[in-house]
Image (cartoon, rainbow, N blue to C red):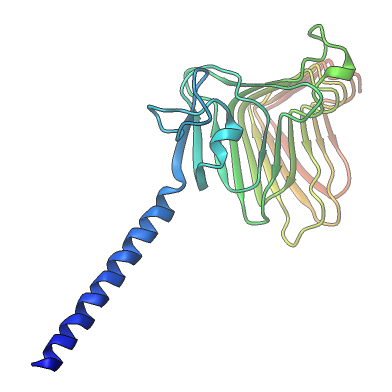
Length: 239
């Protein structure tokens, strides 16, 4: 009889441990969502859900799981952002999310070597030539430093002191890749698109894009780059 009671206690304890493990794993899983939302009238103190969106991309990214997506609910200025993990940043299908910066980069991708980042439907304004002197303009619209791949779709970068899109990955074990589709880069202080790598080839594919009225080159490819450019318009640049 005594042994039966002990066995029952052991079984009960095992059940309690299993339940505790389930509760703990649920809390961890719920710490970050696979899809978060930002809005022009949001608040970064919110959980970044559709009904309680955040105000900025920077506020939403810490609440978004790796491989997840941040979506814009409505037009708005969602601030500069540094991306350190796989993620999709979508400014919205019916409207375009905006990043307006002065004296800094718009979006910096500094992710791990296996991470893939997608940026789409974005308008990045560096203020150069819009009543702002060069000392107050943004540096680069989108800057790609590290990661496995960066895909830019339907983005417009303009008015930056340096480059609209700047791709300068350091040496890393695997060759990073970048693809651009319909991203106009206009009226930037240097290049529309600048690509230069260190020690490892970077593969760049540009399609259906426009690079116009930039102070230096529309597209400048430097060391360790392998570009494919087609169906694109490059004109009105100084170089």
